[in-house]
Length: 639
Image (cartoon, rainbow, N blue to C red):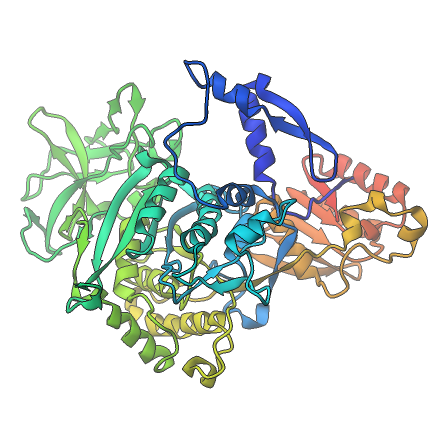
């Protein structure tokens, strides 16, 4: 029976495999740090294969810094850690689809690589700006030599993972670049094909950040460098009074991105009905290369249009149901591809009153949405008074009290970014969550448009200083501030939501980064003699619960951590079911055949047990035979 891996995927190994598929002759072997042979790349040969000329010398246009190679390696290294649920600190655990994760964001995102690979529609981060006064992460890059540690000062004198990166240090920019690079690499893996990332930054690292983003996302996927007026009166900054910061905007694949326009003031509508004024917005998705019947078949379906009875605007009633006298209309074919609609059929059926047919000058009938808000493409300079810095401070002060958190981002800024970068069902990630303004913005926007956006907040539990207002108010670390803000903001948003309050998700599941659930013997059983193994009662750490084990299995199998979970007792043991059968788990010792057969009878997609659930090898073989007979399509593993 196959064992669970119990560590994050090794992206470096996956990349070697992908290169090998394209260039099999560059695959060679090399020894790892333990002297064992592993697949490797002949980079000299690879460079020659990618060049039309003879490769000679190392000259190239490139951006580098002390420690770059180690940071690249770090981005792909697996971690033997896990995320442990903390139900008592969560809100609406059984109902919510939102997550708040505590821990080093690089390790957390590595663990999320399978559950949320290519699933995040929008990422927003507000990383340390490297002003010389703020703190940056200090990651453990494990290499054979101490040279790298000496070059960039890997730890402070107390071996802390956060350190104050003083501007007078010769390692000033290198340390920051080594911090941000692997985080952006893992972030890109999480973005969906039409996903977008917004990164707040100021003058200190804007140039380096843009070069890193060009390398990680590709310069062709640069969208914009926004200028945000954060202090109109200016703040003394050398010889000038500084008024602005920046937001860099990149995407996963520029050909797939379709950013939303933003609402503008005005009343210049071309049409009107009993509800009010409106303009027309085409319902066909015009990005036919990324959205067509081949990859979005559920978005291609016919409409039926009553062309015999136009309304006062000369527009026609449309329906998804075929009716006598109605003309069938389908999304057009462009460049040989069948285009699709922007709305799914269920939404179209429920909101058909917001759609009309329109006959063009060429006689073609097209489907349009009634757009009741005037919109325009977002500009690259944002100067609205609602997004200046002190607005964020005042908003948080009203929720939590004065002086709790320094420089929180204004709610209006994050809500505007979320409007531009998401649709109604998007997942939004912020892995420098801070006071959780992003979560607040997601809930508020859902309350305004009826959306079902989900958020994932990730934050290191950095201690609040002993003499700080936050500590005096009872907050021991930044995570406690963020969680309390979400609780209070959620209730406030719900009270103000009105029509959309009923199904509004204002909860969140709390998970905390921790060491692996498994003892060292799990990963290196071959290093233990039979006599030593017999003395080990279990390969699972004693302080780990069923829920801990369950969520580590979700991570490895690539299942979202927000899926519904129910527990029940069968024949005296507890079993756990995820999303009505995506996974069924039982971690009890010595389970009976009755339990195994009951689980198999339900034919889950996946089933997992403890290795010690079965007394011996014959019992394991029996379990495998039961599943082959009763649930042949179930993937069964043990840990």
